Amino acid sequence: MSTVNVVNIKNENVGQIELKDDIFNREVKEYLLHDVVRMQRAARRSGNACTKTRVEVSGGGKKPWRQKGTGRARAGSNTSPLWRGGGVAFGPKPRDYSMKINRKVRQQALSMAMSARFQEGNLIVVDDFTMERIKTKDFVGIMNLLEVGNGLIVIDNAHENLVKSSSNVNGFKVLSAEGLNVYDILLHKKLILVQPVIESLEKRLSA
Image 1 (cartoon, rainbow, N blue to C red):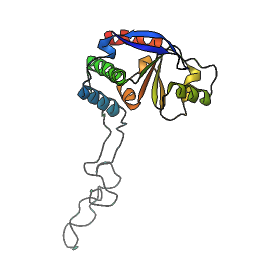
Image 2 (image 1 turned 45 degrees about the horizontal axis):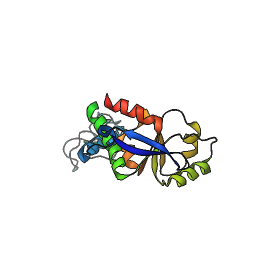
Image 3 (image 1 turned 135 degrees about the vertical axis):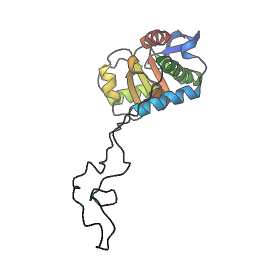
Image 4 (image 1 turned 60 degrees about the vertical axis):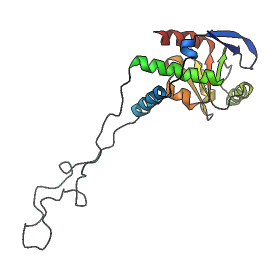
């Protein structure tokens, strides 16, 4: 078991909590993180680029001019890719870019990403992150107290005031425990966990 300090939103130490080593302090394999990030980014690609082939563009049917005797090159249809307004040869069509990675591997990568932040000293556990009002200035003040300039905040339930207060502050993102993923962890320098989240993450990643 590894131990980490628990602080409040004023950055005052209020206790300690034990973390499971097989989830928060395991060996980090960069190739696994790379594979999962590639999978996540590929899944976000829309894949809806589409061009028309020569059978899909309007026109065609009639031969533009006779085969011989005009002095011009032979032409069978004005839908040829060689013609202006013709079809596109080998152009993009709608496709699915998603990749498949086994659930166990995704779980391992998620625990490795959190382990990387813990081993760097960039994992912060907060006992509670309740904000009394929606105020960006208040959120920025809390982040300054916690000495965080870029971070991912993981919450256990609805924190509407926190979500709305942080929404227009660059470098910060708020996610639920269910939505936690490798890409967002690696994208932010600090990982801030609200204390009740730890139990749900350990249960999720131990399954």
